[in-house]
Length: 338
Image (tube, rainbow, N blue to C red; front, side, top):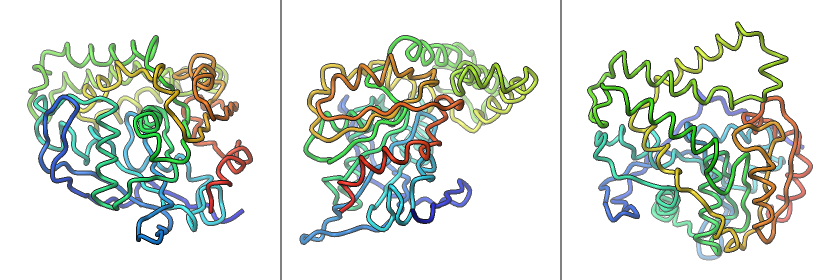
């Protein structure tokens, strides 16, 4: 079907675009807001010189622009996401390092509080300012990025043709709400956190708290079958230690702000606004967003949607394995590949 684009994280190069200013829902204004982004594929222009084949990719909570690698197995010339026919834009969301965030701006705990709608408007304003794009061919959102994709389609229904929700949900509740609260409780209760006005480099105490907060999430990454049947206790311990060590690249305020941004996320009453065609992709073994709690009820609230559920021992991380449902993806995308 074509040549897969191999996206190696270390080889992915971003650009920085600076918005003159960005206004948050709470009325606060951030001057000179940086947006980190990259593009793949080929822009196509209509008779007015406007790009009309753009797809916007939204990453998960601890990702950035490089997270577009999750769709790399079905991306490339002649593939599902045909880079000869689509122009794919991936950026680091509001609140993520290297885009405008508490750490990048140096504002720390003075950075404006934001929610998912702010994250959507941040990307929307970037597309207009940088590319003069106001209408997108599609949106693809993985995990928390799905919150943004669905929110966009609810807020601006006439601005997009299709949406793909990938291992995501339409609301935060239950264990997902609790996980975010527990992570923040660990970080904010550290004496060295100092209400978010902590010294840099962070203390050993804050490093320990970051590691503990990451430990909270580790059991939800892979399927429970993978943990129980395919990994020894020693291997799990080593993986947890590596996962915790990787968390140290994150800024504490960035984590706290990000977790707070979706605590009140709930599109139950808004999904009926969506006019785009929607593909909901879920994984049976996903412990963050079990299909029966998230994808299935969501599919009953959206007018024009298709629900695809597949198996992966990788659980929530199994969104890398889109080659397993390449046929279903091709069937959905083919009508949008002009």
